[in-house]
Image (cartoon, rainbow, N blue to C red; front, side, top):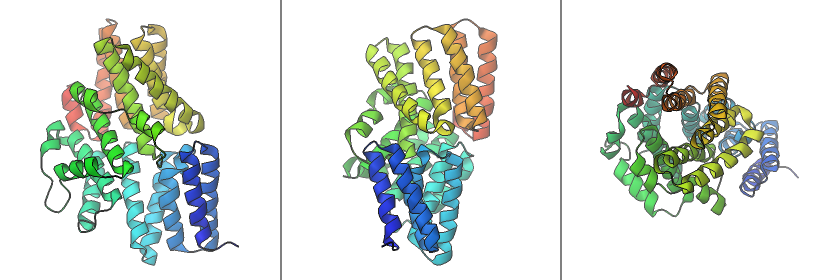
Length: 345
């Protein structure tokens, strides 16, 4: 019969199904786990199931913003019933999801710092994942050179977390580091770093690990980086990598358009720009910007405006280029990415 263990079993089965490529089945199992946990009326169990299902399964269908709200609920329920572990895990996932939705970077970095400081004596794999995104957020505010600085004494410093990620057997932590490196390298146009960062997609396809939403977004940045490098180097291998990333994002966009439609459109725009199809490129840039606005991804709207501006500049349309780049700067300012604004300015 059903017991308090049943929702956990369904949740883990959902995660496994998604890892094996059955996204719809995984989502159904995850939804069932949440429903059972709520029916049992045990707040700590609901908090625990939210911490499993939302970051690992729910994103294949539900908007990131809804997932953030669910993590906020899980954090509150765990706190109310004394389940500190589930409460803290939901709080960590809340801030990671806020990063994906383009919430204010100053607020996110402050909350992440508080989480790491609170758990400085008991670092879990999630603490390390938070640390990578914390340092990325601060770099986007203060500048890329921040990566070489040492963190405060009450949180893990960058040297320590990078060394741990390189030595650990936990794929989740090393892949998290790789994803954050990819995002940082692209946003700061650190081409040498892009060359050195291994492919995220190849690791996801080659290993049966939980498919967190952050990793899928990392493939989006890998695709953007690949098309950018293809235009710089004229090397077809980058087009191949870009096309593979595009196909991957297209799959998830079909399932969760509210999370990935704008990302797919921007990758398509970059592809058409790379193969010199100006008409389709312009159309896709415009569609990507509208989609990012519709789904309220201010940071990805900023990226879309910037890449459209570079496209117009390449085509000699200087007024449109300046207009697009100015809008990009405005969006990056709203996100709080002062260092990216400085690069563009």
